[in-house]
Amino acid sequence: MFFGQKCGEQWLTPDTRASCSLPQLHPVIRSAAVLSRFSYMSEPAPKTCVVCGRTMQWRKKWERSWDEVRYCSTACRRRGVQSVDRELESAIVELLTERSRGSSICPNDAARVVGGAEWEQLAEPARAAARRLTAVGRTEITQAGRVVDPSTAKGLIRIRLR
Ligand SMILES: [Zn+2]
Image 1 (cartoon, rainbow, N blue to C red):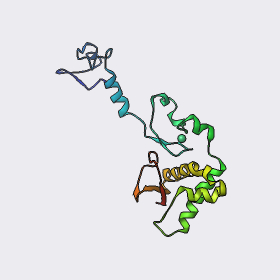
Image 2: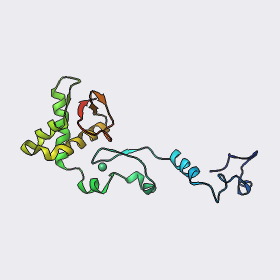
Image 3: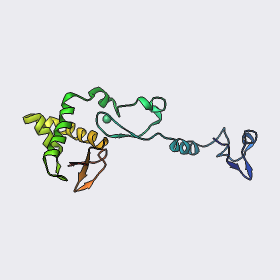
Image 4: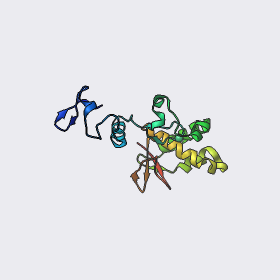
């Protein structure tokens, strides 16, 4: 990590880096700031939780298992993706396909199609379905007509085909 860096006027090599007196480059007392900058630079790209559709940023605890990480949380892992979730995805796409190009729906519209009188229980699952569809590029999520990040959007959202 320190090869090719300069210590004072001297380029660091495997032989000279141990004697470098600049604290931030010394292997023994190199600062956390330097290390965190390096780990930031090499951080893997974010992924999408397969259940809630939110973006997951790489975390140190996932260092060894990042390739296998699929869920953002224990709650998502426990819940999984159920058949009702796939129904909600289909309902969103069908409702949007029926409408004229560029028009949008509310996630609750899909919740009503799938859940009927019990639709309110599906309000959050419908939002998650919209996020999953957005993550794979089929839809986008808007607020006041502007495309927003589904992972962080709070309050009423609308869905439209991309
Ligand atoms: Zn999740």
